[in-house]
Image 1 (spheres, rainbow, N blue to C red):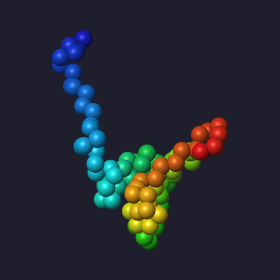
Image 2: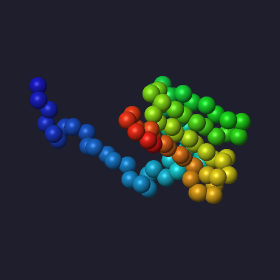
Image 3: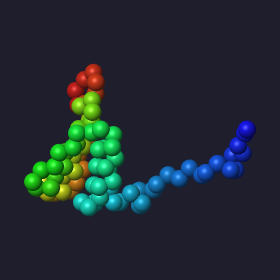
Length: 88
């Protein structure tokens, strides 16, 4: 059975305007829920910052809405990747 290309759903790519919630200090839920579902280790601090590490330990994602140094840099998310064969 073949399917006509006209019957397939269109590919929709979000624009930067539709992803503004990712950079907001209230938008961590969907991202952290996804990381949790993928088996990441997630730890939250009493200050309401959240730190997540990938199962292989090579990727760190921090949601830092209460970190003063993050405020100074105007960031909320911090992502760090450690390549398997080198320095970060």
